[in-house]
Image 1 (cartoon, one colour):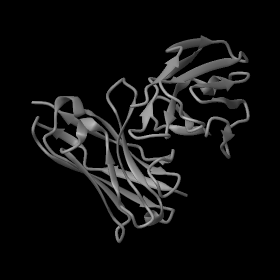
Image 2 (cartoon, helix red, strand yellow):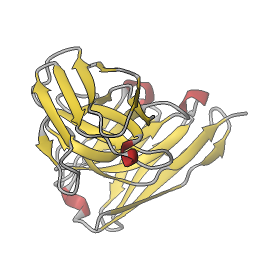
Image 3 (spheres, chains in turn brown, orange):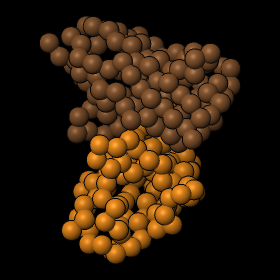
Image 4 (cartoon, one colour):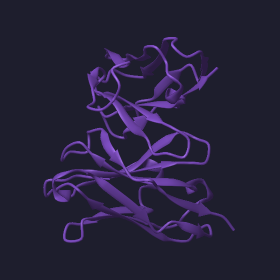
Length: 122
Length: 107
């Protein structure tokens, strides 16, 4: 059974930094692309970033986070990360870690974690 | 960016009724359109992949259709447990984009 467990969320001031983690189990982590999707309170879903699998580790970002967020993965720990810098109030959201259906980033998300809440406020 | 426009935003439906939700893409996306269900305080759950392909474990009353720019999610004979918000997702091109969601309420 696929399990994705996010951690690292919290309250941070504008301009601050956070690192989100997602511990994965139940599948061959390195094979699949992984992504982060966020949901602002009471709002819809927004794709934030993906990293390809199959050894490529190519990264992709939505324009609003380019240059501020960095996605990475540690294959030895089966863990996905999202390093978030220069945080803005509009980054406040529940951040989901999600597994994509294949190695490339143009694939749907077939498993999701429960999310970790990031609140950016002074 | 491919914009996905869902309609309606909200629907209040009696049990056993049929529900139809549409998702229109701002440019052609082939069949790279997927549907999710999100219940309150839960993470999204995949219902349909590639416009019409069923997912193991998902009740057969959930069906999808369409290609190109116009897609439909149909819930045949709505059940009380289907109260949720439904989202579409396109994976034809980056950035991946979601529709705004359709909230289905049970009358």
